[in-house]
Image (cartoon, rainbow, N blue to C red; front, side):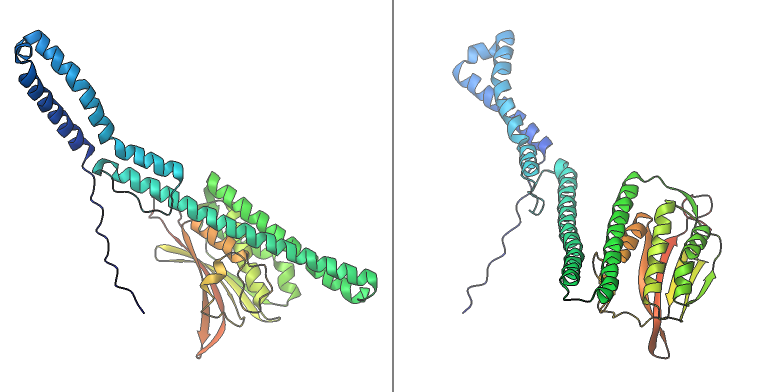
Length: 343
């Protein structure tokens, strides 16, 4: 059984302008005082000196009351700020206060969203930190009690320690990114040089997996933080190496497009389910069957956004089948002489 349809409430009327309130209040006060004086003491009201003094004494309290009433929306706005009502709809306010009201509620809403995001992140991080230590404790207890073979347990314990170390490293990296973004000490950085340094850094890992690695680049200068740019490339390349089959091909390309600079890291992995591709940039999200921490791509997105760049993942299709994944970062190039990123 359904009830009657609810009638949508009419939008609240917008309060009058503060200026209009004050002018109307002053006019009404003057009119009221003049009527009272003419009605009760017309002789005194007609006297130039005493009449003016009486009018002033009578008008001041009434006009003060009008000012208090006219500025009531400011008190309402102050009450909303004290209450921290970020999710509530803003009250209708006079035209003069509308920009301030929108700005205040925008700040409160962003603060609420940031606080909620940090709460979820801390909850996920604490869970991610507890899990490997619980596993490590179980492995130690099993090995010490003789229920598990020490020879078989030690490699598993080492893998657990490595995963915990990687999680702590990425959490520290994320904290450093947030600090550098807040400081915003940007400088001109050569993307090609940073890319070459990162490739050399990953040389041993590439050799260990026997990956056929290729590197193509042109000089591109960006205005950013050099450590953050390197961390962006390290996370993307590490992710590609992790998912690339042993002995397959993998490459990095730095090139200039019309009005854009592009970094491309491609691999011959198995591709990513399109339904989860966008979620991989959220903290602690991994592809189906993935063994990673789930923070690397989240760090990449945060760094890219601080650079006003876009980072995306694409499945590379050939002959109607997915043959690999492309990780692409694009920076808008500023016109010559305008500063910012340029080739």
